[in-house]
Length: 213
Image (tube, rainbow, N blue to C red; front, side, top):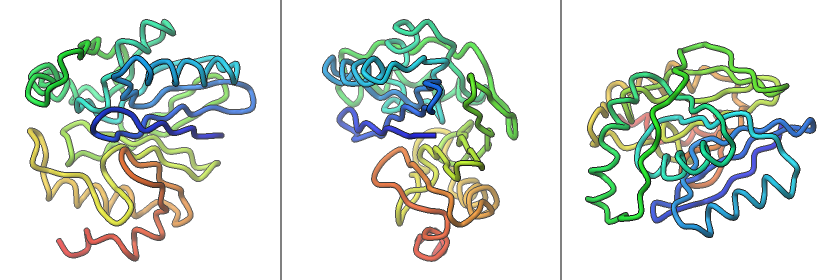
C-alpha cells in the first residue's frame, strides 16, 4: 500500500491518494481548490493508471473538502463520511465566505455513512474505520494494520494535535480519542496527518505535548 500526499490550498492541507500494486485507489480528504491542484491530482492518478473507487473524508472542515465535488464528479464514485459530520459539512459554505474562498464548490452530501470499527474494502484495499471525535463531532481515521499506516486527519500531528475551538470541537473528547484510540495502536504505525509531516504512534507517545493537558 502506497500513500501519495499532496499539500493543497491556503490551509496547507494534506490530501492523500492511497493505492496498491493492483492499481486500486481511494482519495482521502481532497483539498484541491485551485485548478492546478485539481490537475496535479488527476495527472498523478492517470500517470499511475489507478482506478479510483471512492472519496473518503476523515472529517468535513472546509480545507478537507474543497475537492469533494470535483473528485466525486470526475471519477463517478461515492463519498464516504461519518453521519455526525453532516453538522460540520453544513458549516462549509459560511466558512468559505468567512475565509475568502469565493470559488468554493459545495460538497455533495455523503452517499455512504461509515461507523466505528467498520471494515471498508475497495478492490484489494482495506481500511478499518476508527471513530475519533474531538476536532470535529464525527471525525474518523482510516487504519490498515497489515501496512502499519493510519490516515489520521486532524486528530494527531507531529508534536501536536488538532484544534478544538471550532464548532463541534472538544478538548476532553480529543484527549480521549488520542489516548484511547490512537495511542493504543502499534507504536510503529505511520501516521499521515491532515497537516504537516508524517510521524509514528511511538514517537507521539513520547514527544507529543497532549500529555500536558
